[in-house]
Image (cartoon, rainbow over all chains, first blue to last red):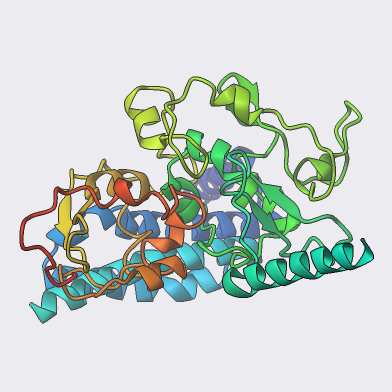
Length: 111
Length: 275
């Protein structure tokens, strides 16, 4: 029983040591930098996915356009948390994209 | 003799006064190299710098309107963007290309804003903050456009023809900045009826406009109507900078060039309602 306990403690210690050797404990700066990078990457991906379709705006039906507009609105609060310059540019890009979808949606609904 | 001189002076003054009274002061047309020039003073004066002089002609020969006005988010009205040196230094606006790293046409694009002047002794800020200064430009208008097809007004260049004939190849995507997108489906050109009887109808080149602008540059900010016939355009509005006038009074070929838009042969019994 004692030997088994010793072995499991040893294995756990070795695993922990190997893990720490591979990836040292991240500092606070690294963590926040990663968080920022992830957040940025994440909003950018969503933005690209929504706004890369503007040239097809006329091909979407009203429901699809509504969905794109809702995704634009959901993205806005995330963009508002960005650094000032990036926020200014991203806000404008998002609004241009959203306005186009809204404009096409209204036009289609009037028909 | 004195009386004659006195009467001549009176006559000259009267005629000048009458001429000015009737027509006002004629607005001077810009020279071809100056057409489309924009003077930006968003933050310059506060920073103690001269306003920025931006030449549209060179940038439009390299990029589509969409790259700068949609992807880089430059506003369509002077001063509406609020570009700061800090924005440029972080790689936004001018700094997306003018970062000292990007190469274009085999030439390194100069860095727009930075804390230090370049090692070659040139004053960095003066390259753009150049109003009222004698600053040597990298590209000389006359030399650069010498072989381009000519037009009568604006820059004196037929930019559309220049692209068709391969003199310019405006880039539509800026790596790392532009939103990824597939190429636009070809849009059909369409006709817009002229208001006046005898005036040729307009053939609107939707194809050319969508290739250079995308959809979102014009809709809905400039053209809020998508259904043909819902918006009534007037030349008064257009001359005041609305609709087509957003670009065709300042950068694109000017409104004086009537035949560039009013191209459809006049039909007998014309005078249809404008669309």
